[in-house]
Image 1 (cartoon, helix red, strand yellow):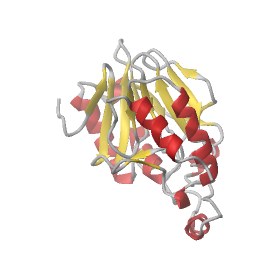
Image 2 (cartoon, one colour):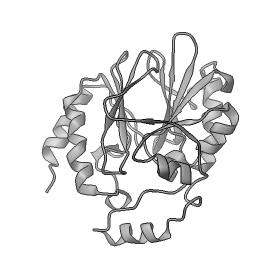
Image 3 (cartoon, rainbow, N blue to C red):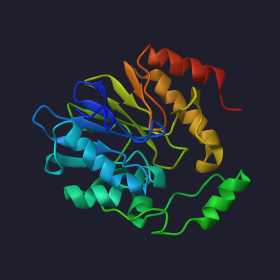
Image 4 (cartoon, rainbow, N blue to C red):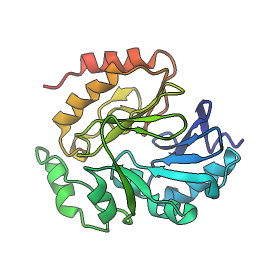
Length: 239
């Protein structure tokens, strides 16, 4: 296994470092060999996602599901490439589905100057290549992925932002609800649709049970991750 292409998190679950540890995707593999890919990184990351399949002994033909935690260019940028290589379509939360299909980011938080600027610069089909959405997931849904992948709607970073709990391995994929870059921290405020809502809904992560916390930005936490996240949330309550 090419360790530089994938990082094992639990049996059947891997992190894909797409831009070092700063931008990550994920692989989940069922017992029968079916593969699910979660988040595809920036536009140039598409080939790296495909290469990661080979690192675990799988192939594009084994991929049966593609999932996005939300419709931002650093998560959906490589999505069109991966869709072409695998022949699959995407599962996205229903509140981000139209943005993903249009290749545009949701509006950014108007409370911040940069947020207003990013919103004005966004153009449909220009933020990332549009993708085809085949399923619009909803909060509490358990996707039939590797024994069950529970959808936890954590809006704020985007309207349809989700975190994902793999129940068989007790692995949490936080999405961009919380970063782990030089320690736990909030996502960049001006990248959020509603930063205050991001802070509010992230508290749902402290109510879940998991043994590994995996981040789309930053390395995973394996040592008492729930306690670490609950401690962060208790110290950083919404204003």
